[in-house]
Length: 331
Image 1 (cartoon, one colour):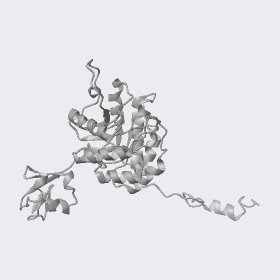
Image 2: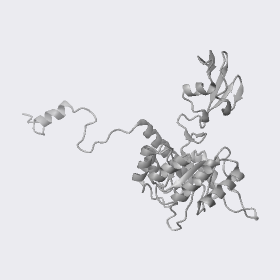
Image 3: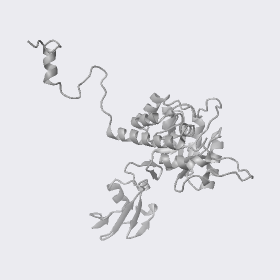
């Protein structure tokens, strides 16, 4: 008998890999220890379990969340990704904390010898940095920025932005795909910003993207869900987290897209340009949580015609109908 996470299990003679498969675990998203010794993933198939072995199987839970957002091998309790542009540095910490965000985007720029303030000094400890390739006009430029970002912060996350259009700032889907293909092969957790096109989304998934990040409206406009119908197609057809990026202007819009089934929302301008930045960050947090809860609960059906009373008609109302609508004579 093998004890698996404290439970006696008939697994003696079975390989560790088969045990994980039988119990429904993705071996790439768990860590395993046997008799207090960590087992490398490359050894799962060759390790044979013996009677009295004690197996511990663990995974990330995003701060205790029972509904984590999973990107690559990481789990996050928050489904709100915060952009860091346009802020006064002094307000970034308050925005992150009020948003409950666990991930924040950062852009790379050439260093100045004058010793300007560094945004990293204002981001709370424990927040995952999501470098973006803002400013890239080609796939190769995006790849170079991503590699520099990994050298700088030591992480594998990267948000791919490739934008040639300087008027509407629409992402170049074809160059984004090329950059994703290269970086995914190099072990990056690639999160590509894209125009919501189903064919490109499928290609990005096949290229190894960890999610797709369609725009809701042109970046920085706060115009809301202009691309609602195309986003819905992605939600129906793409087997990856769909994270809504760019254009969301109000908490109510963030709530709506989460109700539709989006995995997360990224917002920057709507918060950075608000009158009260910390309060707006908190409002977005609550809206995203409410939308996710509604999606998981399953919204009720919609009637296109007629109406149905929420409680049975009373005898009083039936009597009125039978009497011609006025209840009949009192005489």
